[in-house]
Image (cartoon, rainbow, N blue to C red; front, side, top):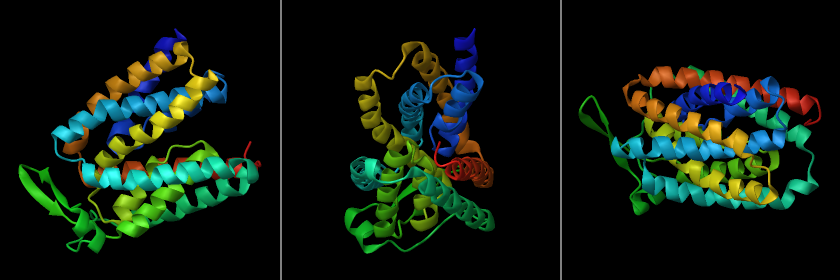
Length: 273
């Protein structure tokens, strides 16, 4: 019975994760630990599986709909992977409590800025690096192609690196930072940001999942219903997302950021426990 309930929760997590480009872990981990009393290590391991499943379930559909910017995803993954390596190196030398508070405060500030911005991000000016790497592209809207440029690439890569560091230090997914960097700094349309993030988070999570597998933290009785539910939910989320107005996606993302920020600050005030 518990497995069935976990699977239904995971369906919702996959649906929301595919729409927002965050992965399903943001819902799955609290559900597994709070409602089912599952050890946090096993919950995080199952979350990583769910992120891979979300990416796998949604990426194919987004690629078919021409929403994912593959060239940009590959470039930005360099920063994320580098950050994850740095984070693993310093993880034993730093207290997590202040980092949680800093992270949560930054999310609150970012959600406020995103709330103030009513329209979709857009720029007609490529950063020189983006021009050289041919990162600009287009995506369909109501049967017509909308062309977009990629601004602020160096700052975007830096934010991706910091996202990788925080992911390793705090054991969180970096989908929120990916979206904020692409939407706020590089001025990508929200749907492109979400689709590209969906593709990237699967690559990032795969490496971490391997480490959890070697440690024996991936439990089949937990990970299997999570993965099945996530794949089903992400499939439908990927179908719905291209049809949703940008403002609906943005508002949902802001709500999720506020929830995560509150959790991070609370955890930081309790010394990261």
